[in-house]
Image (cartoon, rainbow, N blue to C red; front, side, top):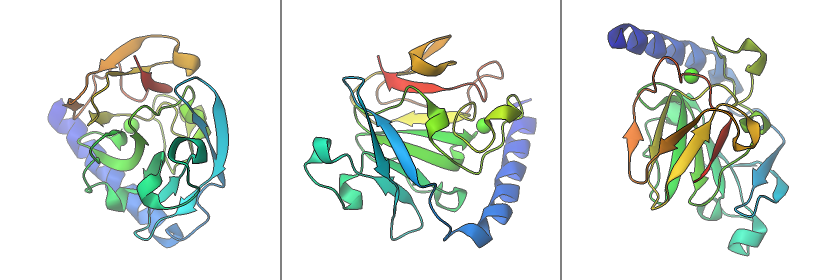
Length: 186
Ligand SMILES: [Ca+2]
């Protein structure tokens, strides 16, 4: 079963690569709404990184308004999924085995609604979430010193699962696959 899933995930990654390759320089989804640790939100423009990734900087958190090194969140297309999840970051992946689109939060960051985050994603479980990060996560890495959780519903509601600090999971269970809608410290 794991083998089959891996093959399917690889096929999906290849298909997605083929689809997004011509659009790699397309507009990076406009704006993004970040949820801060105090649960306040801020809407920021996505900025295009030099390597084809996208990022957003929270000026309150870093005291700056630009520079990928100051990013609160980064979005990487499948062609960049092989890049490591950065130290002091938590990464969620569209596909199993840390493949597909990657959403990377700076330590302490997260969101109460992954539907705010766009990606060229398709969910077999929840087609109504296509095009956003809601109901897409199939694997994750937590390279922070903080315990994170993900949950099935927005606002940290619904069934909750721990993403322990320093740990990684290459494939969530079939029950958990394509279900995450919130990612938050816990
Ligand atoms: Ca998925």
